[in-house]
Image (cartoon, rainbow, N blue to C red; front, side, top):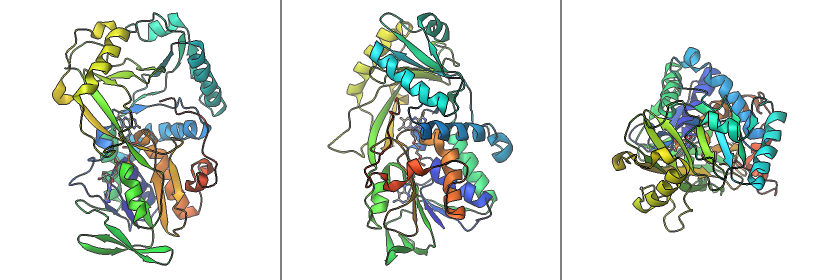
Length: 381
Ligand SMILES: Cc1cc2nc3c(=O)[nH]c(=O)nc-3n(C[C@H](O)[C@H](O)[C@H](O)COP(=O)(O)OP(=O)(O)OC[C@H]3O[C@@H](n4cnc5c(N)ncnc54)[C@H](O)[C@@H]3O)c2cc1C
């Protein structure tokens, strides 16, 4: 079995396969070391507040597994239930949040609740509440530490016999009809009975080597970081303004500010930080969180990375259409760290049991786009 990509999803898949007794697993990554893809760029948010039942269920499964990571893998995933607070500017935005909450309750996330102006000011007193219509809050959402989780899965997989090979790009496949016979790398061909594409934002390029087109596209995301200080409390909930996706959290004393870019048509894989983006993000921060007005940005600690977008912002999990032995674990659309524990377990079940048994993952089948049945329900962010 060859897994392409040693990010958090590839590592989780390798670990879950090995934990089920499948130890002849090789994980290839083109990077010099783990975490050089998107996993190392993630801010570490965790939430179950989504707009579709499948994403809520993935989060609930992940949450259950994150709580056991210390016992299972011997690392602290950093899961801290500080909450996610979504804020609406008008009645339409609030209605969308409440419609999503209806889905969340039906999927078993009972603690997500509506909050009025008084309540959200208690949850985050730093917010300028002027003109806000209300919001929603879930106290079990919060934060995780992406690189610690990645390290836990890699070390756990290695203990079970999985091999990791870095600076080893998958450059192509040797096909035998509709099957992959071998993975081509600069070091030679590696025979493979099964191959897993866990190549994150680069997944479409890998799939194309097998003659498969998958709708995964990169999308740059940028993060502005302040200098460390006691500007805002570390346990402040992730606070999101629905109107434009501007959101912020505190990590290691730094306030992290995010605001979605427009997709880059010219060079979609360029993940360099664009200084021109700072002005609009800071004007939002100063208007909405007035206490940040004089807080200095640490330009050297700002960064950018790539989301791995699918057209319906849901993961693709399962066999690639048209190839008998290529599995896809792609397109988490910016939620891949939080969902990695669940996706790893479910894909191991698909490979070893023929289907996901822990939960019904039909909604994630890669063929849904060709069938004209993408998932409905916004990702909210
Ligand atoms: C700024 C930012 C903030 C984010 N915040 C969050 C968050 O708060 N919570 C959350 O859950 N998610 C977040 N994400 C998204 C998250 O980072 C991704 O969903 C997740 O890391 C995807 O994991 P992955 O293992 O699929 O991809 P990656 O970590 O990118 O791993 C893919 C690996 O494949 C390798 N690779 C690529 N091509 C090849 C090839 N041809 N051969 C061999 N190896 C190859 C790459 O080197 C890479 O290591 C954020 C992302 C960004 C950019």
